[in-house]
Length: 411
Image 1 (tube, rainbow, N blue to C red):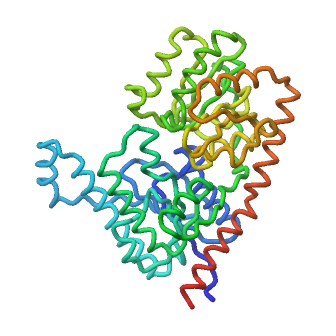
Image 2: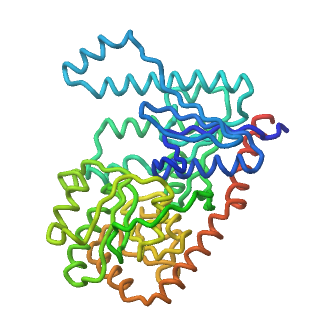
Image 3: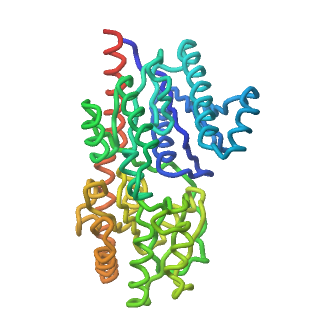
């Protein structure tokens, strides 16, 4: 049997100490660090038109793939834009990117650069996956139509068609896995195939500790991550409008990894938060993306963390906050997935997903906790995540999945 030695990771998001790009970037950074620390040679492919910052680590090679400009399309693209058909320009760009990526991956595999590819579904080369010459394992994300329902209330026919293409392409993957039970069960039903749950490993990545941010108004509760509809940022703002009126002992800090226009609110989410909390201008702050050490310090300085997702895929925000011994208010519901890691009242708290009244009640409950009670729950949270996301146990499961794929290909 071929010995697994060289692993390739394909992701459109990847973060380092100096650049934090969100949950997927965080997950793939942890995967690559663990592989490198345990003797594997790692290549991280980042196919992106965006500028992505990164640092190289021993035994990790970064290959940023920006497709070459196709001059043959320039006049055609201009005409499409002229007639406001930008979506076709985007499709052409995406196809070119996938075609270039496919060529690079095929060549590198033939040259012995990697044994197997671990693929973030967002970077999936679905137009070419059936033509691949290399073994692929795909880490699944949120079900796209369900996600769009949460963000936009409606799902376009074009999005449904794209999702069907994605699902059809998954049969060409050699193995699949998901970090949450919600995503695993959804895709298992869709494609009639086993999808194991392999959580994201949690461990200290050795970042230096920054100085305290003295501009934050303490004590404060913290929301961090994308200011998105499915993350429940608007529901938290509406809940805080009530909480602030009834309790003057707590402030709020939002650290926004990403901000989008939200059809749910009819405006950008940060604007909606500011409008909803306009009667309390000195009680909240909205910060932009931070370097990871700064974010960790703010998490540790917070009184507690509120992450009221309506739909999620066992988000890294929850795992990170629990790992840092913070009391976390998450959500329970059919699509939340946070109740897969938090036991209400023991190692965190759960409000009903999408329910403002339930969130208000839960925040008020946490505000009544003593420091000793918060410390006990924080310690329980840390132990829960340390056990459930133990890097050696989690990554051994992933390595075994890779070994099984290589073994099956040989036989």
